[in-house]
Length: 286
Image (cartoon, rainbow, N blue to C red):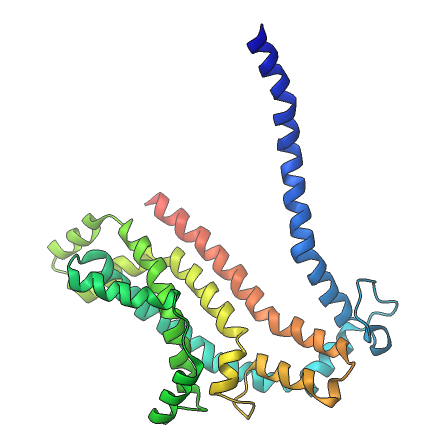
């Protein structure tokens, strides 16, 4: 009887927790994401008089089109967008290709030399690069203030993360697939391109999101490597126009710039998310 009573007493509490837990998660999401997002969107749609002091109130007069148009023209967004693409896209491609190739070797070879190389490679997760050292090396190589120099910095910074995630994923792939291709006469390059890379689509999509998110919004390293000249990326342009006299108290244009700058990352995230689901489903069917 006591056991039955105890179980019946616990049942309502567990049922109530199942109801309350999702509400807590939604509340935390609203506080952490919803409020900043609402502040950004509403401020970017307000006239200058209403946006002098950003708050959570809705605009009395909505003018998002005019704000976004002014932010793009006065903030030189087209040039900044092109500069960001010329730096971020090659960096992501190099991180994915080099990371996948290195991870394949680390996952399939077992020797003390490979283990030591893997430890050195992923040490970048714990040891952030020194800005002074990076800038001095780029100057010695003649790459300071150039896009190739910025691409080299991003590739070196995020290669450790790519290798770490991809190595664990490759270790879960059955080795028999590669052995079967090797018995059919396929060489290492063909095995890597035809067998390994297609199976890496989910983790490559995840790595793409991470690297693009970090590189696209980076302003610290880009400021020291590229500066604020004609090669300035979108975050550098945002920093420049937000601190300039033209944008003093023009928070509606600053927030409009932030919204437009974030749209490519939102699109990449949505596309990559679909690729993750497609890759997992394809692997399950096979």
